[in-house]
Image (cartoon, rainbow, N blue to C red; front, side):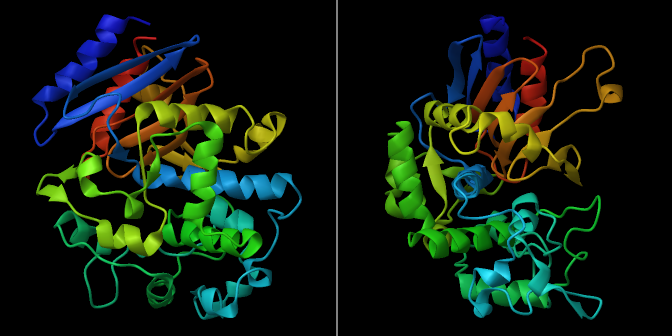
Length: 340
């Protein structure tokens, strides 16, 4: 791995409009190196966005590992009726009672996304966030809105997946029922266990203690959202490295069984989703002269990443901290992978 070339790739991000900074940490052959510029460095605390799904899935996988849950368990046998009854109706058929833990973990439930899908008579919630309109999304509102948006397909339809935030909000509720603790309480115990001393939940941290989230419209504020979900996480590249390594070294699910989670379904190009994990892949015809190996882990909507690269036995964490332009981080990752 050429460190100078890696650093040059990150430094070249200075040319990108609206980008205030970037930071990456790459672990290759046991050597870990940071690369950064602008308002981000290896000690910066930043919003990890949907990488938090790996935290939820890891905690769920532990319960499966320990025999306290099964992938085939119906959520109707775990959660109160108020959280599942009538939530999935497709072409007049009610599939709510057939939803399973595996459907939620793999985004194969067919449930819509209350953030990305257009709400009846209203704008997309994500568009409002990008315009600077912070919103509270308590669980009651999540369920009500999900019911109002059409389901995408029957749960478990072969070859189909649809990325929906509601799946992991429901998983948070399953953790609460099964452990008696909220996702932020479970997360804090996990961070302590893994030595992630610079990681915490946004609703418990003062805004001055982390790098603000940027978009092309300026700084985004999501404090109301974070207070309502209780699962929005702030971390550093080093702490995310501790986490992603632990994930793929068997801290949550037996290492020898991790491959069984790699049951990939397309969600949107160039991503696939397995059981609690995401894959970023580039088909050979997009890079015919040098193969880009698949990355497994998760990314976030602000250009945050935490991935394992099995073919290289390498890990990468980081962020460009810019909402609404996720392509920037993956363009950068591809360039970096070419330097391994």
